[in-house]
Length: 472
Image 1: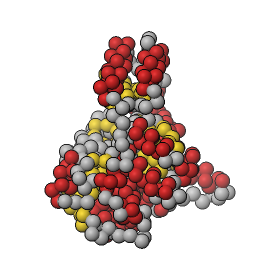
Image 2 (image 1 turned 120 degrees about the horizontal axis):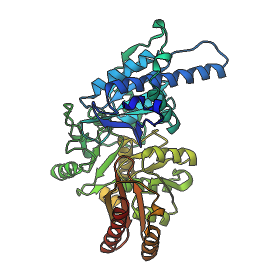
Image 3 (image 1 turned 180 degrees about the horizontal axis):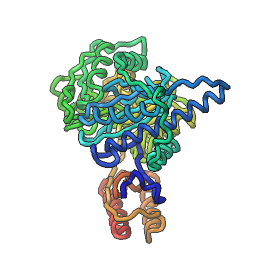
Image 4 (image 1 turned 45 degrees about the vertical axis):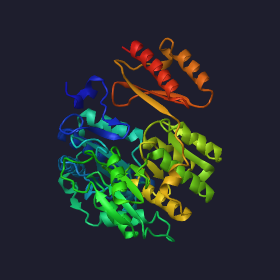
């Protein structure tokens, strides 16, 4: 049975994961036939929203929806771009293609160009064989879970032809040539007007991805001397031993070129990992900690609150509380961080993996914006990055991925609750235990933090063995 028609038999079609649709190119769900239907489903939803807006404004004049499409540098991007544009156009949507551009750039342009939606074709930090689709609404924020489920329902119905408009209402497709320049100006506006990057040497790794042109321009136009690597995309080398998942490339270059800082972006530049002048790697927790402390000192950290996920290190939480900053934890995924930031009216949050959201400047994680904010702290304090980096001390952390054959309520696993309670009692508030199922793989992730690495490793293995034995 074809998965696209599964709804007719009562089963559920699952396209979306924690961050859009993602999979191996030319395989489910990233097949051309499915991508066309996804485009059509998005068109159906946007037409409905247009009709509702017209009704609320008491007008009979309906403008056709407009959608921006951007992508990273993957070989399959051309194929998926055409398929999406075809699906959207067939539903009467005007399509504007902007070419390679970071994911946050599409969020920004969707809002600033008054588009009905924005779509990014990217599998983020994954290898080139994968690709994906991320969707932004007219407000520049990612589609809600409700709208994602409606797309899945429409695609599964396999009756999208009933929504097709007459020939005179078919959409048009064109390319936008100045999108990169608009985004560069926007990102630079997040850096204080009183400062420049004159005299600063930085190493920039753009992972042979979407930011290979714009990122260099951003930092150079602010005055920095930029040594760039990962800037020769060929369709298949995106994230290949480069970028945020491989910061060792930047760390080596920082030492070799005696740079002040290293900046490593991932394939779609929505996450960043940084390196200080001594070659020490800084993950997202350190970037968040440095920026939160600085914003609080300036009275600019809204509600004195930092939003992170459950994967953030206990050391970050401890440092924040010592400085009067409340830490709110949400589920893994920058989408959930953004939802909490909007709900609680806060302006800074992110993930250990490098998704950093400055909500005053961006509607999603933006690696360039995050890096500029760290450079601004360096300029305003006159302190080297190594000194700022050392202000956040990590608590030892052990993460074990356990392969399982089934997913169940963990509290119903015999002995699990008692074991967790016993371990937390031994940690005495100086560490934590966090266990969750992977959203995309048959894995359960066991995370234990505490001051004694030998003990937390022992605790993590005890939990892993129990779950491995019972979830078969």
